[in-house]
Length: 165
Image (cartoon, rainbow, N blue to C red; front, top):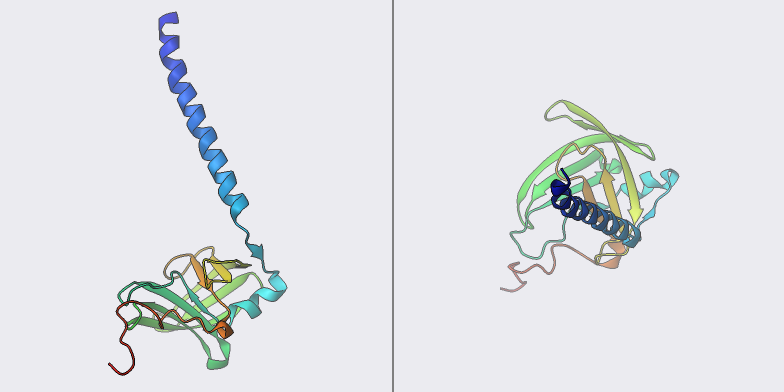
């Protein structure tokens, strides 16, 4: 019986060591996230009239997902695309400070999800992060930027046609 103990201790010690390392890494990652939550009272204003993309494309054929909430035009659009082509789906929505209710008329589908917006500092040019708790389409995390900054995910990708060529 005692002969089995030395073999169990190293495995248990390794498990505890791995678990402690994982917990420390998780704590470091959470602590390094400098995201500043946007108050629910301001979240709807931050949500609308901004492009929300899941990745900043580097090449013309990089795949990305885009949401744009534009109530002045009657709703919004979801896009599954590359830089120059893709699919889109129009929707109407109602947003409070913490919930978005989507209606996708093409599929006669409704979906509600909690959401949060945070101010972030990058990666450049991103200044906002949108997280959809139960995303109706695509990934759950999207990024936005201050559109007055002149940043465009379509202007400097490799493989994009250049004016005059």
